[in-house]
Length: 321
Ligand code: HEM
Image (tube, rainbow, N blue to C red):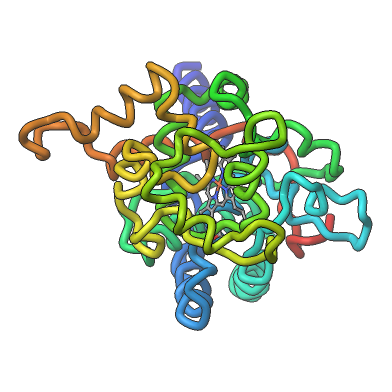
């Protein structure tokens, strides 16, 4: 009887831990899983540096719609697939996920989820951009639905700071997470498409965003001229667009944010004080660490709406159910 009780306890415990995310989830079932993803990401970034920011953005867009369950990857050639939603415009990196998945299917068929590959690839991308490394919690399972409408509630560059806070809060993410995760814009580029309204049609269709530092105007206008090509790309973190660092927060403080949503972080008392907190200490080593806080927030992002245990499934091909 006592033995039975202990056995039940052990089984229950195993059941619970199996149903949750954990670092090293594939240690026994697919020991090379993380190394395989890292190798594929390294090769992809070696031939195209812009893939690193793309993979980080892909993780964010995956997690914000239906949770981190790979619904964004589905591409059945239907316009109605979530991937084709307007809100996901410019999201890239799908090929890298597909290559990693096919290598993983050869090594350990049916074991590693597409959602976990996306989360692992984001970490590897951050590291390749000289950002912090961290243990990625794994054990996510893949979702079974895909629809453009699911992306309706993605944060938008023109959302007010209140709206951005609300959208993050709906995912269980705080104002601090909003600031720190927006600082992912420390790497990568934006199309002029997403920022020209700040220059030419800001207030009621005319004028420009007064929060832009006057010194920055001529530069932005020459990169994104009125009626110019909206596909031209510019770094979102002026002077440091390829290195993962806190320069983006300095730029936001100084009026050098490129995206309106980043600039708006400095127009609200709470988020402004969070930005400032990284620069206020007289001894930088005693103040908060941007890198450590980023790790905390991205691990939290990776838990949003996950499917675990027997929920969802493990797709054999990431773009197809
Ligand atoms: C707060 C709300 C956010 C808004 C409104 C927003 C909006 C945007 C926009 C408009 C772009 C440019 C897209 C393009 O032209 O291809 C972009 C790029 C990017 N975003 Fe965000 N974003 C937000 C939050 C985040 C978060 C939370 C992350 C990751 C944790 C993230 C990571 C990235 C990265 C890395 C890029 C660069 C992509 C590339 O170079 O291909 N963003 N974002």
